[in-house]
Length: 120
Image 1 (cartoon, rainbow, N blue to C red):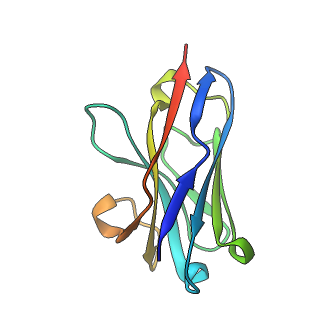
Image 2: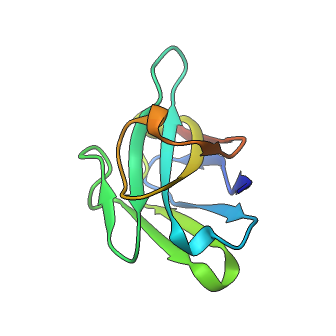
């Protein structure tokens, strides 16, 4: 499956952005999809993931970010509210068969990344 992330941009602290991950292929509904982010000089970290309808979240984004999926459109969204400067990073979507896990090495399909910059 091929994934393509979009929706990044520049936003002020407290603002919102909605990222989208579009997938090709007929097996999308069988995949767990997760969002990771990588800030400059830091390791890639798990942000949120979804298998069926319930999402799982990193503590740092819980109650601010919401992940959802539309299998009819082969798309996963990440709604990001109350953004903080520390959310600044390149955001990647990734897919795998099986349950959502939080290690990037466990995901075989990756999108190209989209930059999110939050100004203070």
